[in-house]
Length: 141
Image (cartoon, rainbow, N blue to C red):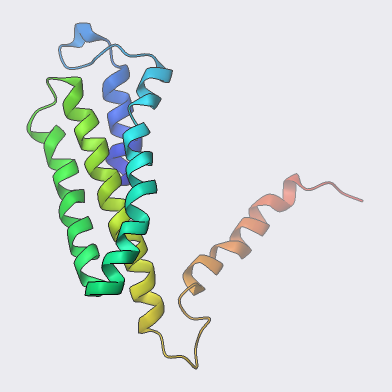
């Protein structure tokens, strides 16, 4: 979902219109095409929490996944008009907003209470490698 939205769609928008499939947009215009994605995430993240509280994590996770697939299918089928890419960005934002919040909560709830540090463990595994890679650039005393 994110790869297609943040990398491929702006490239498609910025390609010259003379190619037959590009839209000849500027970098700023291509960035503005991602605004529906961001706005939809902002709105549907909290909606995911409401749905999860009433129906459980599976419903928003499933809805978000389905919308994420639809967001990738729309430009794969046709990207003849720029509004199709806006639709794809909006669907992607809704899907990410619904699925990301539900997935995080489902992971945290699935961990036994005696092991509360387990869910964020994969994200912590990157910290040592970041420290090592940043070390050559740190000021020496």
